[in-house]
Length: 184
Image (tube, rainbow, N blue to C red; front, side, top):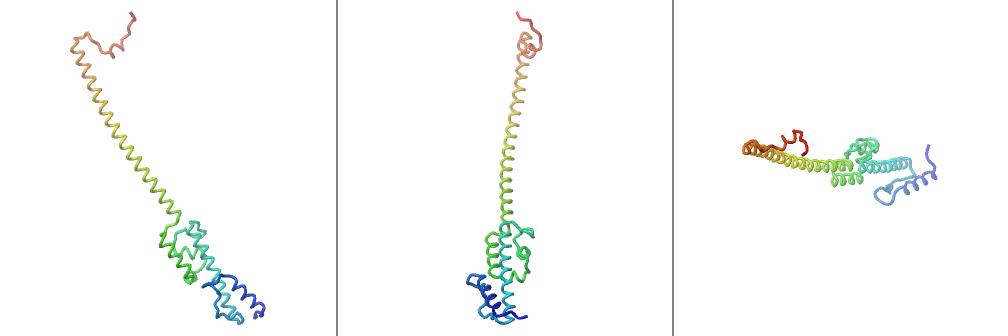
């Protein structure tokens, strides 16, 4: 069945209205009044729609919200996310140039991966600070325990010295506290 002239005219108008002037315009040498021209126009229009799918997939991957892939910024994930073949993706040279420029500028990591790594780095930094703080506090605790032990030893030595010097008349408070005393 061959399309009528009115159908062909409407199809041509629709195809011309689908894009702004630029490299994606309907090819000027396309004859919309021939059967092969209509087929070529259909292929062109399908490619245009696939480009839109590719752009949407690229936006989803960059935003870190993939629908069908693991979210890594690879070309394989791009064409799979768009639901197109690799060959179709490679024919969209302007979109692939944008993709390559983005990956070159931002790397292959998604925003979510970058945020996760930044959070891990911040937590690692805080952990190092707390570990250093704990190490300092343990050092101070050891020093305080050493001073307390030395003071206790000196105190015991002074008690023994006082007991020996007084000849038994002086009693230590600890011994006195242990006895029951009647008030005077």
